[in-house]
Length: 177
Image (cartoon, helix red, strand yellow):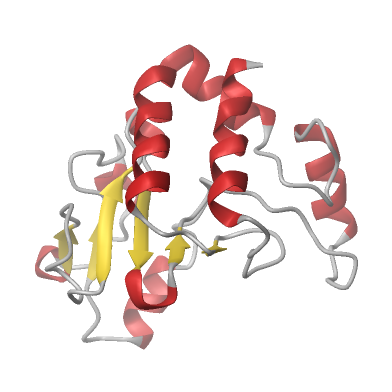
């Protein structure tokens, strides 16, 4: 749950804004927000590049079930795709992976914890409750339009820079297997 430390973070940075996914706003997000977070500090992300900086492009990963929406950010000068759970590179041998993370990854991924592979539950969510065709069109589109050379994500060894665009694409094309 990525909102666990939200209240503490918002208190630590009193002038920060909280950005939430625009159209893909997860159902129930208002209930998850601590009551101490005033609405004026919450802003909905919009696709494009004007909200942060002209060099940062924002796009919804379309096709993901609404409750599990994902925004993708692309930093053009560094050719970096920034996502939360939309990519899972696994852990490099040189990186520490806790016993719990190893167990979780072994149970939820078909290739263990060292390989690029999305968790089975994430693929199943899209297959059952989402729109796989729409998601794959979105993935193909960003891989063509954005020169993705590295990926930063919430879990695993980052930055990932081994044929990053094709690895991102292949992760989602596991839906077709």
